[in-house]
Image (tube, rainbow, N blue to C red; front, top):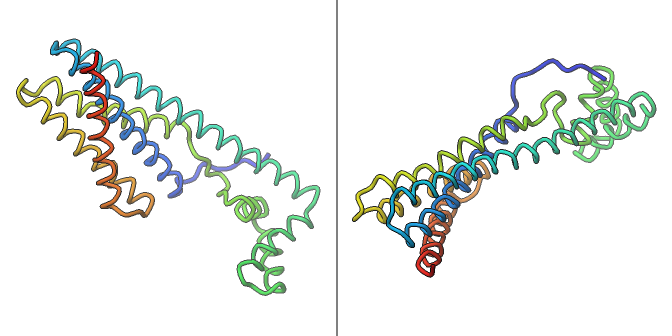
Length: 228
């Protein structure tokens, strides 16, 4: 197996870590505020509310982290398996690999003669790196790190849930609901803004959508708490 020297992280690797953080933060906000509002609607005991919110915050953070770790680990294993397969094919079916790279450039609009020359040159210099990039869009040596995604999700989920938890437990009794609504609106808007930037989406739509979802979450769980 070819040994790959550790290289500087690519933009894709950095964005994956940031993506995990955004998703973790959003989940932390909604799940924690859901538990807080449900319990607070059923009881005024601040200690009970705090313990319920804190327990859910920790459970959510570790759940998100383990989910990200499992998901990204699977993707990383799949990428490594593809690289190992291409390494074998370069030894057993070099002509087929050369043809695949040639076809790649032909499909990009390059003439077949020029494509063949480019493919021959690339496979002479960096055969494995060229093939995995052309066939799988994988940068050799740059695999998504499951630990980065897990820790990003862990800390962001905890941070996202911390805002509504602090608002509910620290704000004066007369203003606690206003504080919770403001905390959820602010943090939901922030995650909507970041996620839209990552996905090149519409910032205004993402922000408004997240705020509405947060407010709906509060309303539903408040109703559940009042029922019981």
